[in-house]
Image (cartoon, rainbow, N blue to C red; front, side, top):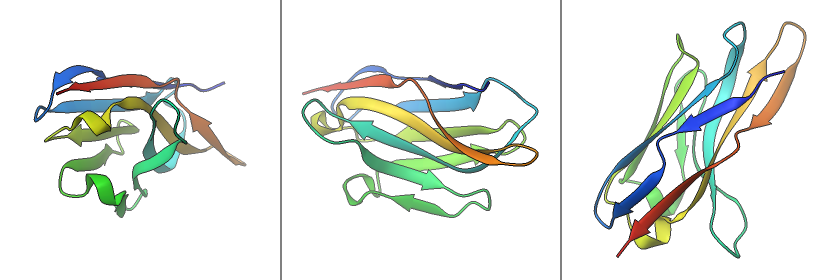
Length: 119
């Protein structure tokens, strides 16, 4: 079994920064596309940013220019640097990854980390 372990959430004032990290609980695997989603109360889960194994990135319009996704392939870790945070960024942030095993690829979700931005 594999788990995606997230860290870095918390409470920050508007205009501040946070950095989220996500890594698998095992090292004997490879990661394809990795990404971050978020879900605010009463809203659907939405894609925030994703990054392929080759480094191609994709962002939600609402975070372009403020958030940066990156990955360390040697550590199988994905990061989300969040700058100029706004109260509307408040949500539970979930890591998502396509994990490549010897004979198959499966999609996994992390348990979520709370990000709260106060005005």
